[in-house]
Image (cartoon, rainbow, N blue to C red; front, side):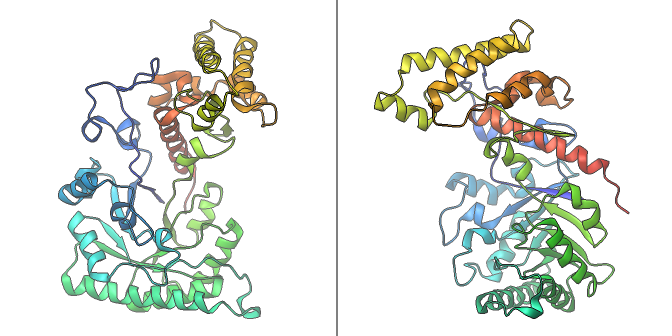
Length: 406
C-alpha cells in the first residue's frame, strides 16, 4: 500500500528562530527551505502527487505556484524541483476540485500529456470531472443528468488520453480516472476503463463518502475488476479501513488530511499512535488578524496583549525544561486566552491541560519533536504548524507500516 502526499508547496526553514519568531536574513526559500521528506526520517510517504491546476491554475483561478516557481518546476522537472530521493515516486493529476464548477474540464488531452511527460512524472491520471453525489441503491433512484454527463466526459477523456500516450510513446504510466455516484456506476466506470486497456485506475469523488460507502463501491467493483488491476483512492486517508480496502484491490492512496489537521482541525492537531492532542494556541499579536482587529477597535490593549503573549511562551518553555508547574502555565494561557477570545468564545484550557500533562512530544522519536520539543505543540505561525503537520505524516507512516496487507 503506497501513500502519496499531495503537494501544495509546503516547506519549512531549518534556520527559523523560534525564540524571536524570525527568519534568517540570509535565507533563500527555494534554496534553503526543506520538504517533509528532507526534514524527517524515515521518509513519511512513498511519493508525491502534483496537480496541474495547482501548478498552472485553472479557469477558477490562479494556481498555488508563483510565476517563478512554475517556471522553475517546468525547467527542473518534478523530481529535481522537489529534490526527491530515488525511492519516492511521482504521480500527476489535473486537480479536478479546482474546476468543479465548470461545465467541462479546462484542459485538453495534449496539454496534460505534455505536463506529465515534460515534467518527468512516473504516472499520470487522465482528465476527469468530479461527481458529488451518492446513491447507495442506484436501481431505486434516477441519477442526475449532470452526473451521467460528467461520467461520460471522464470516460471519453480517459480513452483519448490512453490513445495519446500510445501514439506519442509516453514514458509515464497512464492511470484511468473513474467517477461515479454509487457502487454500480463506479463499477461501470472501472469496467469501461479496463476495456480501454487501463491496469491502474484512480477512484475520484469519494472524499465525502463514509468508509462503509467506499467499501460498498469497492465490493461492486470487485465484480468487474481484473485480478491485475490496481486501484488508487484519490484524497482518501482512512487508516482504520486500509486493510479492508487492500483486500479489494486498493494499492495506493493520497491525502493531505494528516498534515492539514495540524492547523485546520479544531482539536486533533498533534497526532500519536493512539490518538491526537490539541495544540496550544498562542497567536502572534502582530500576525493574527482577529487579534489585530480587536486591538485596532480598542477592545484589547496592544501592550497588554504583547505582555500576555510573551508570558505564555516563557511559561511553556519553562514547563518543558521542568522549571514551571502545570498550574503556572495554565494560568498564563488563561490570561492570554481571555484577551484573544473574549468571554463568549470557546475555551481550550481543558484540552491544553491534557496536552501538557501527557507531553506527547517527549516520547516522540521523530527528528522534529526531538529537536524542537514543546515548540512543535504550539499552534502559532506556519513554521511550527507545518512542522507539526510533518510530524503527523510520520505518525501516519508508522501506522501504515503496522498494518497487515495480504
